[in-house]
Image (cartoon, rainbow, N blue to C red; front, side, top):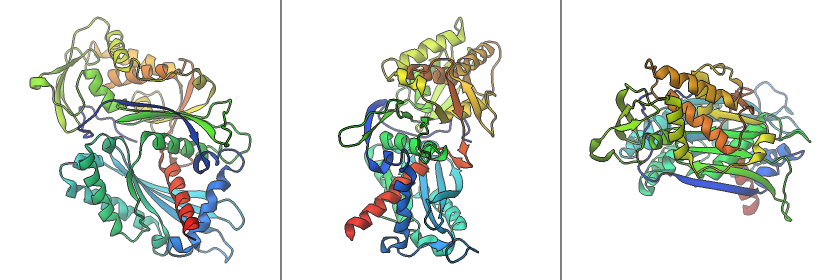
Amino acid sequence: MRKLPSHGTLRMTKVAYPLGLCVGLFIYVAYIKWHRASAAQAFFTVAGAATGARWGQQTFSSPGSAARGPEVFYGIMFDAGSTGTRVHVFQFARPPGETPTLTHETFKALKPGLSAYADDVEKSAQGIQELLDVAKQHIPFDFWKATPLVLKATAGLRLLPGEKAQKLLQKVKEVFKASPFLVGDDCVSIMNGTDEGVSAWITVNFLTGSLKTPGRSSVGMLDLGGGSTQITFLPRVEVTSPLGFTRLCLHSYLGLGLMSARLAILGGVEGKPAEDGKELISPCLSPGFRGEWEHAEVTYRISGQKAAGLHETCASRVSEVLRNKVHKTEEVQHVDFYAFSYYYDLAASVGLIDAEKGGSLMVGDFEIAAKYVCRTLETRPQSSPFTCMDLTYISLLLQEFGFPRDKVLRLTRKIDNVETSWALGAIFHYIDSLKRQKSTAS
């Protein structure tokens, strides 16, 4: 589980804040064709690509299986986020004549995020190589040449100046090219907020069985990262275009991730030190608190202020930050939602859910917890000076999305022992693109 930095070790951006992206998408076959009865089959025909020349060798039966045993293939996805870099090693198996299944995931994360090396690109290679070694340990040697290796960077690199971001990606690509895995020209890239939201939605709906069970309702997805946040769902009343596209509602907000929101609530500007080194004073911090917080390679001096009713004054400040930045829709009331990343971490840190198993809570529980923590801060300091601020922000963000206080959310880090991130959905799409490239070439 991602740990919440108290005084912050986050190094994320040097430029723009916030860019709001609000999109009603018409998603084509590579994504939404998986939805409904033919969903899994539509993607998993790509497993056959592993037997072709594009992949360099044939797939192999799992050890100890009969000649007609399951075909096994792998995919490696690096998630280069704003607070850390993670590797997901996925193993799939396809019994003869059946749809493949995800049989195992290996996951490891390292801090800091890739963007922390913006001014020292060479240092980024060590962490990438360490995670590549994890993939080598969990994929049999005979599969290496046939296993696609991909890195997608999210908000941390999206917010970096273009030249610095590209230098980091080029260094990663050099390390990838020296590896024994299948590396394409497009193996390293920055993922936009739209693709991130869609891929996360696919992951959650695949893992919950919604993409494989005819007539089963899909679930919505809430993701809160350090630099951006996404909400993605399929409306209960589906809308399709004359060409057969399915409307997936996705809203991605760059700059409204938890760490970027902290800076905005404190009154700072992304990537810029406080003017003349002044303290950033916030009603969301304990009245007697003084300290430092590092964000985006900038160290800020921060302090609390005396106020009558810490939660009320904090909520007022958070409302100012969110005003006119978030799209609200009543449709979210009628869709079941899974939430992860910082939603999970905050809820676990204050005991709203089990830290290991996750659980369900109501949207209003975040507000109740925020009021309690903020009230406690008025009389005694807490281990994390940001908890009052963070809980208040999450509470109001969810309400701005349109969730009523009694709406139940399911918070989880894993479903069937697989991380609930966008990585699985993204590797689906990448493998599908390999199949389409092979078909075009032939």
